[in-house]
Length: 359
Image 1 (cartoon, rainbow, N blue to C red):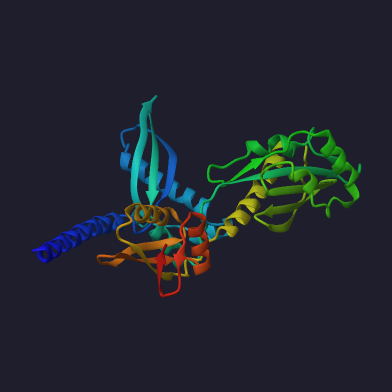
Image 2 (image 1 turned 180 degrees about the vertical axis):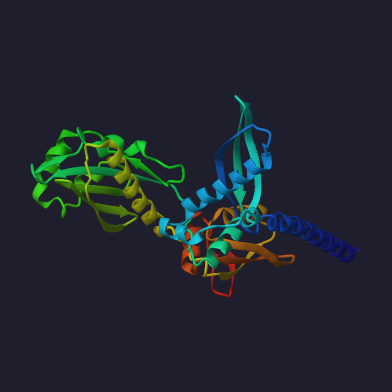
């Protein structure tokens, strides 16, 4: 009788675990493509006339949202490769959209849209164009613009520096970099003036170390007559590069011309940041992972992180049994990058066999 009871108990336990696994399976498959790209606050206006068509307004919002997404995840040079795209192509990559606000004021229709793009479809579209996208990661960077008047052999850092005064006013909604300007410091000014003759070789650590950012861009703006040469020392995540740009017939007293130069510089800096976060979508590495089927919270946390991770192309449950749930993960990168990202979130693996075990 006891033996029969044990058999019945084992069967009930197996049925229960299978039921839990099925729930987890369906929970998983709703997220196999990872998170979407969300573009919010797309604002469109149109006169409310006899031929007014709300659908045309929404379609215009889709085009604007797609253009903004491209500005966020691909470089300025790659954006030129896209050219014209049909509206139906854009709609085919949209998961959902919402009208956040709409109103009529003085015979004009206003609408604010939020558009959600399917990440996998966007990546596939760009891959066909031979474009590698970047993960849209925001970044705070210390920015120090220094005007060097070569005629007067003088440095202008804070006062009378139009770049310092104007920089934060020039910003696009698709920019990922948030610039932090230094506080006015007479000691820093003296330190820089003392290094006028070696300013191009100076590493600026005595100044940048005062700010708890770790990353910085120093723009040395050499002014001579109507020519401006800008040497940018970009130091981000341990990567240090120098970018040289020349602007002819540039008047640094002219606010509009300074603003245009700032826009050009910000494009260079944004492109550099995107390059550091580029995703090689041509790499589709299959990873095989199994988790103990009884550790429900660990399973949920694992799936949540896979969903949020931009380098995950897709993931799904390939099979399950009484002991384990088996996942296949398609990853846009190398195993070491995957393991590092997972380790940073507290997930460690036994990688001795082809199928890794989440510890």
